[in-house]
Amino acid sequence: MPRLPTVAIIGKPNTGKSTLFNRLYGRRKAIVSEVPGTTRDHVAGRVEAPIPYLLVDTGGMGRGTEDKELEDDVHAQSLLALEHADLILFTINSRDELTASDFEIADLLRKKRKNHVPVILVPTKCDNPEATDEVLPRAYEFGIAESVIPVSATHRIGIDDLQTEIEKLLASLHFQAQEEEKSTSPHIAIVGKPNVGKSSFVNALMSDTQRERSALLVSDLPGTTRDAVDITLKYQTKEFIFIDTAGLHRHRKDEPVAALAELRSIRALEMADIVVLIVDAHEPVSKHDKRIASMAVEEGKGLIILLNKIDLVPSVERPRIVAEARSAFAFCRFAPLLPCSAKTRSDIIKIFDLITLAHESRTRRITTKALHEWYQDAVEDKPLGTLSKTKHLTQAEDIPPTFVLFVRDPKQVQLSQLRYLENTLRKTFGFEGTPVRWITKAAR
Image (tube, rainbow, N blue to C red):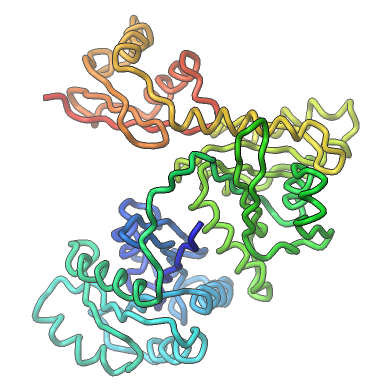
């Protein structure tokens, strides 16, 4: 699988990085706020373009936030993204005068980025053409950018020019357009916190011959796996491509390698069809475990939760541990949960059937006739407001399964009503292991 290039947005707090990210990414994912420093962690998403790339929004570098405690950590994370990006978008606020912090960031770009990595200087909030003309001479003062492209992400001014320039520079770095893969083999990202047994799990799935030839490094030291590694395994004539990744977890400013591992893991998740989230049966489900699951759901990936090291839990305690894990992941009840042990290889073979089920669910299509019959039964005598009067729905071509409801007034449709529809849909058609999405459109 070709490597996905990384494009990092770098700049001071409140220079419009998150708004620019959302515009390039195509949907609202980064948090946008007038309060400097709102973005604390990396936010990343795959941008579908002629040359696809992973777009990374970073917290602001330099000073200017209200929360001094996290400033250094956010700066360190942004610096890490800078050092490992293939292309950098350096944002400055066109409405403000250039400050010492702007020039400090420019100096860091000179010193810390790889020599071949191009920089596009992006003056933001340029919705006034006359003001934009005044900004350009100041922008060239930095002397570090291949090009300067003023934008107003809010009004989509300059965005097409910026996207064109990104594609041109990625092509100059020998990244190529990715053709549709003919293989139907699912790509499975193995993710989770460090030291939960990700590499041990993949090793346990291998044949003895394969383990002798290409076993993954296993250690009790968290963070042993630094890069994503692709392993192709066969089971009952089917091929499965596993991506073993470095651990996803929060990191301190003194853990640059772990933070780099997180970026690589996010990239692997973006490239996968199915995400296998491994959690430690010995430990309570953490906020970070839930965050990884949420990322997979938001990106429309198939999801399987694997409760590893169950062999270390006394038999009498196992039902409670499993119940607590299911409760912790209540927001993604569609995801199968598999208690197993990579060490003893107990029940791990079941993962292949679960992956196959999730993969088929993601690509499953329901006929419009069957959908209408289900819908009539689902809404009959139910207080569902405008949904009760819906006359037409269909399944879109998108993956994961996406259903379009044509209603009189989409604004009147409540989230709780869509949840009810999803629950009844799953009872009828299954869709285990995959999120489903709903789109409401005004009926004509």
